[in-house]
Amino acid sequence: MPILLEILMADPILHVRESGFEFPERMIHLFVGGSELHGAKVHGTDDLDIYGLYVEAPELVLGLESLPHFVWSTAGNDRRKKGRGKKGQRPEIEQKYGYDVKAAMHTLRLLYQCKELLLEQRITLPRPERDFLIKVRTGKYSMEKVLRIAEELFGACEEAAKASTLPDKVDRNVVSRLITAAYRKMWDASETVLA
Image 1 (spheres, helix red, strand yellow):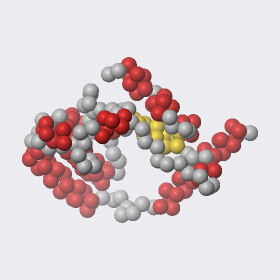
Image 2 (cartoon, helix red, strand yellow; image 1 turned 180 degrees about the horizontal axis):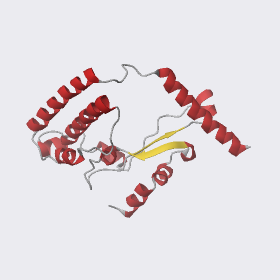
Image 3 (spheres, rainbow, N blue to C red; image 1 turned 45 degrees about the vertical axis):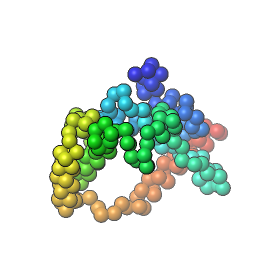
Image 4 (cartoon, one colour; image 1 turned 30 degrees about the vertical axis):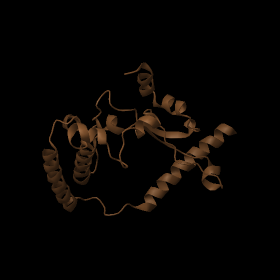
């Protein structure tokens, strides 16, 4: 792993500053995501995925100006576009393994997460089955076996949904109050610093 990447992984906010994001001081949550978060990273094949939430300044929320969604990748635009078919397709992986092993891994991961969320009302990260997911991603299983496992997991998720105590809908009022409180807390802190 290049030394710069090691440094950036050690402190994700440095990565955010290097990316050109205009408001790193307004970040309220920042984390390494992607395969690294799920525990299914295949070393030497992935870029660094960092995700974050920030609170916009009042004038960007309440005024006439706005900001576009900010996306930047250590992979760079050339690598992300190279060898790609239609959106989401990876012909180079399909050619090597006979199917898209990365998409297969993510499908199984999501099914495991769905089942856990429905039954236990939480999602464990990194994933407990990460060793299995890495084997799927590195082509250790045939497409037929992966499809069989996916079919079993779909069935398990359907059964878990029947038994789940999670509400059918999100309480949008509770979520709105939480978001409002986060904005007000950040804005109040900004006013204190500026005063």
